[in-house]
Amino acid sequence: MSYKTSLSGSWWRKHRFFKLYMLREATVLPLAFLLCSLLAGVFSLQDAERFAQWQSFMGNPLIVAVHLIALLASLYHAFTFFQLFPRVMPIRLGDKTLPAQWLVAAQWLAVVVIIAIVLWVVSGGEP
Amino acid sequence: MNVQTRAIEVTRYSPERDKEPYLQRYDVPFDESTSILDALNYIKEHIDATLSYRWSCRMAICGSCGVMVNGIPKLGCKDFLRLYDHTPETPIRIEPLAHFSVERDLIVNMDEFLTHLEAVKPYIIGDNVDTASLPAEASLQSPAQLSRYQQFANCINCGLCYAACPQFGLNPEFVGPGAIALAHRYNLDSRDHGKTERMPLLNSKNGVWSCTFVGFCSDVCPKGVDPAAAVNQGKVDSAKSMLIQLFKGSQLQGEHQ
Ligand code: SF4
Ligand code: FES
Image 1 (tube, each protein chain N blue to C red):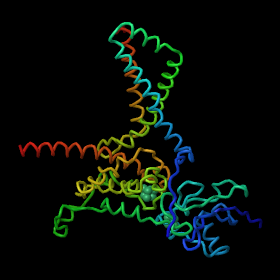
Image 2: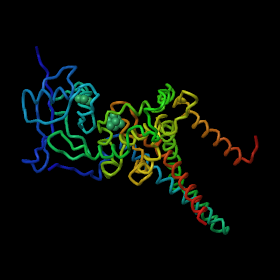
Image 3: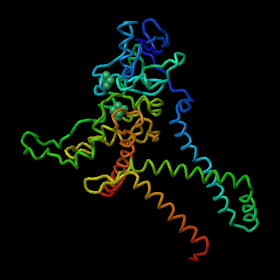
Image 4: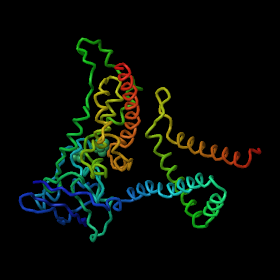
């Protein structure tokens, strides 16, 4: 008769690699909160009083702090995602595979460009 | 000469005698070149002949000497005592590969892995032509075509990736990193025509979608196969194949109407 152990609920605490994996997966929590906040904002557009309430809610230092965490979490998630991308979607030109660092750099470049465009639009489109 | 020794803890389990595995401590002499496998061989030859473990090539080719060393899946012949701490108080712990059932001491039952391996049809599937009558050029392959799958062909079926994979630990039905890497290897081979036969299993609940890209399998793989990349490239393939199915399905329905 052979002996079989089962995986305990704390398996991920046994190695740094697994802890970083759990951290990556946990980034969804503050992001989900941000998403709910934004959804609430959309619904509050129905009347002016509720929109004012929502604005003061968004100005609450605690909420701002959570949203800052969401920003850091999404940057961390983006970092892990961008690292993995070249392994999942290697891009081949002829006989060669594009170097992974190029793809990672291209993705960060895209982030910078998108942020610049968003800032430009939000600031009223002034150059 | 002053011989250094190193304390080692090894899992012992005898199905006839023990209810559950336990650790036994041995002190083995070591130098710069002593591998984990050398240490086990030393124990078997000089201290305790009843110790059971697997090995053959002792050069990272046969894939039979996988064990957990301090909780990490390793090939015994490719891991060295010198890489671990030198205090007698902290023995190096050698255990059977995780997520498999233990037959005796360090020997695990690999049947689950082998069943999955067989299920992905890891061989070239022709298109039912008589290959003997084909001109020799029909099976030629260019270096570029070879380079598409070469990395995935380096797998030695050691099963370390399975011992590293929490998803396999939670669900042994998961086809798993090594087998999916091999499925992918044949799917990428220009001489193969078997992709449609392999995709249904890879698309299924226990196929590529059971993977959450923990990625530890690739970290422990002794041959640089990067099975996590294969599994996740498999997700891209699977998504495509499911879309095609969907499209074909609706076309078929259209024909019936
Ligand atoms: S993919 Fe790597 S770790 Fe997994 S069985 Fe093959 S050689 Fe071993
Ligand atoms: S003994 Fe063959 S891989 Fe270690």
